[in-house]
Image (cartoon, rainbow, N blue to C red; front, top):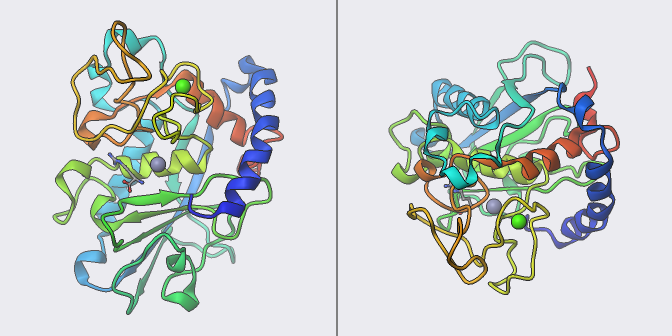
Length: 290
Ligand code: ARG
Ligand code: ZN
Ligand code: CA
């Protein structure tokens, strides 16, 4: 979320979507499962960056577990957060048909001369050393590449009338959960879970408000939080926005910055927010069409 113009469009549409989320017929919504066709664009220079099909499939598996709350580590959820921990209605598959209607395995590769990519979206453009997106209204585009500056990934927030760059970018060493090059703190595929959640309209749980406790992630069931957490805090973890006593902050939420091994839940408020993104009237409703 590096583009200010897109950010402004997103903020303007946000109010309207909040109202929609609240007025949705929740009983009808709860039966709807969205299966999202994914295309993975692997843009590599060294052979280590040319990750295997197996590593890519391991990421799809991780998405299907985490978004459905079928991940094994849900058992770590503290009692105080169990009632708000929630599954979401998303399933993911590699695309089986490309934009021209031909059969595909949903994986595209390019040997580039670019040493590393930043958050400037060059990886999303063939002319700039990357690979062009597939129709952003029908495919979730994921680019995997070498990222500079210790960045693990970034994802674009949704606006109605999808931007040409809609999708997410993930570092090759933080993508999937099998592969010898994976960073040990980020080897469970959760960078991709986090960035997809931005694409589906989730904010950081600390609301990026500089520790003032005045911002919101628009979810009442994620406690107010001062700043991002790293590593692996112990429950309960308190800060200036959620002081003792109580549950403290929800550092085990996918929308914090903790290690992959220590984040394992979405809240019910987050689930209804992402649901509204794909429901009738939402900015990504194009994915609901058969
Ligand atoms: N955009 C964040 C970064 O680059 C991603 C953090 C993901 N965290 C994780 N545990 N996988 O730092
Ligand atoms: Zn983020
Ligand atoms: Ca909150």
